[in-house]
Length: 216
Length: 228
Image 1 (cartoon, rainbow over the protein chains, first blue to last red):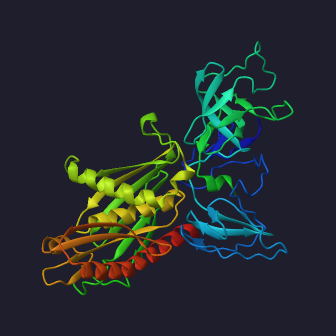
Image 2 (image 1 turned 90 degrees about the vertical axis):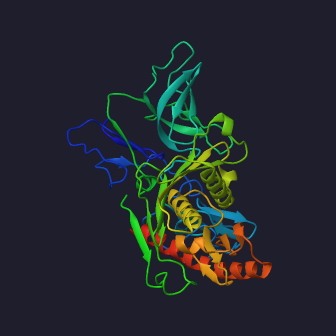
Image 3 (image 1 turned 30 degrees about the horizontal axis):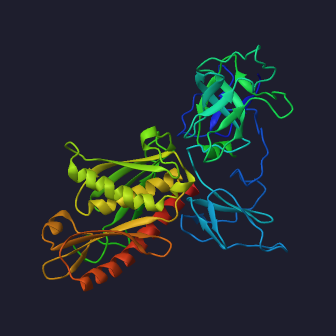
């Protein structure tokens, strides 16, 4: 595997090589090359900011009201991303960060969070902690462990079970992730192919970094 | 992440000059590397260090199905924790839980640990301010910020903001108010001693003005952290 994987839960895999520099999450950017974006989701779900966008915002703190700059014809529709709460007409900030805006009507707060909150559709790296019947329990860095069925691997059937042991690293996508339900991970896409997901073999290192490094 | 330090020295003079001014504040954010959020906050000599972990895994016994379970552990500099520390934990927990948008994180736990570094009077207010900064650093969803101000009434009926330990021993009444940042309303009151309702109202008004300075200090500290 000649590539490095960045996943959205703040974990990164590097191939074993002599010039790997072990980094701690408190220092700067890890020495990673060939990082690639694995997903392009809408801004509703991610707080990534686009480099070609001018910084519109100032530092905002929880409790601040947001003054909206709407310049579309349909002035009642706007999208609020992470860090903003809506009640009827008011938009209030709920995290400390820099308020960002993207045309035409998307607002969010860019904050320096370390703790990962699972979101649907994101690619994450997890550690298998338990095997309970037909389901693996995977630690993805959130408040709850995710479940991963043994059938969610490419070419897995009831007779042909995947070779997953406790302590293995798996790279998968979150199928279900909301505050009310236990997260579910799958290593297979909707058309049955793995697309690079699955158990990560052949050794390597895994680093945990703050989320804002992932989102650059 | 390097610690981000912010001081508010020029606006506030030392204790000896005026009883109606807050002690100078100093704060560092992200001081601990392994916690999700941490802050150290000092008002004058009084200093506290807070760490926030969360939202994370919760024990089944403490799990709440509709919101996050907030736990506070208070550690003193010397000695074993006793009843007084439990009361402080309870006050901190009740005050800070109102600020957190706990319904966004059901069946999780938000753990807050406060360590007393030095107590030189008005320590509970320092702790509340410290926890608010740590929660800002941890990026836990909050409805508003919380700032706490202590004021005392001495035997002549004079109001002293942010009394020191020596001043606290002479007071007839000690009041701690916690304000929120959107409308500057009181969200928590903790009082000891005896006072009239007029004195209470006057203290409320003065402490509200003082809390605005604390909110501005929070804003300056976070602005320095985020600009780096």
